[in-house]
Image 1 (cartoon, one colour):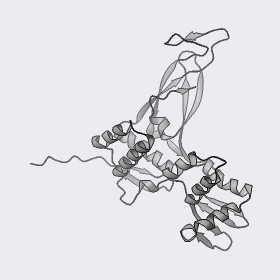
Image 2 (spheres, rainbow, N blue to C red; image 1 turned 180 degrees about the vertical axis):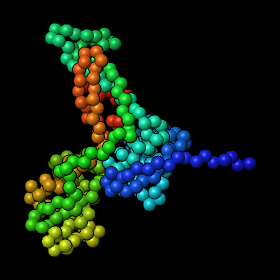
Image 3 (cartoon, rainbow, N blue to C red; image 1 turned 90 degrees about the horizontal axis):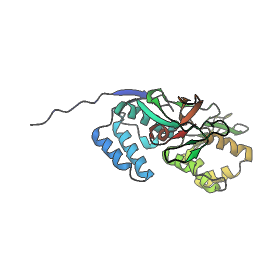
Image 4 (cartoon, rainbow, N blue to C red; image 1 turned 45 degrees about the vertical axis):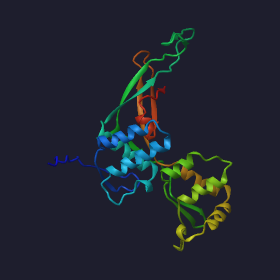
Length: 262
């Protein structure tokens, strides 16, 4: 005799990058187990587990998680976690307001400190967190006299390379930029040069020919990428210290053991 199959609820949201409607289901106990196993592994394995579970739960058959911009993945993961576990997460904050001059306090280990040190758990509703877009971020960049470049938002793999970039490592910087080039075009004539028809050597020579200010326009695109961002108002119940704290990135919202000092 076959056991009956349970039906999962279906939820709807939108991709921040395009506004495309996305249908998803909560992750199952089996998928949650996969995530828990990955917690003890290195970051790459954790990322692969998250992407696999996210891909499993998306009901849009043509949507490939590996091709989504990093901020789309962050946003979808928070929505998925909200519907699979619960909407509210609690993040710990430590009050670092300075004590009056000459006063000290002791922590649990008996060490003296000159700040309040009160720990406060702040609840955050994951469903209220949105992707914030910087008005300076524009994938269409005019470099010179109608010669323009159109970039695409980096995927997770590309974003990891962006985070590791060093100013002195121009070869790696070019690699990241080339991965994100969609096309080069002339805005006055409409003529386009799509990357798929261009040789990599041509693209490198094109980037090398840019002036400093022109190259900085491209780098500004990466520096102002949209991101999951939320402002939390903190108030210490002991010393009454208040502060507005900006939290960014999926890890910050789900790392319940990571204490934010304010």
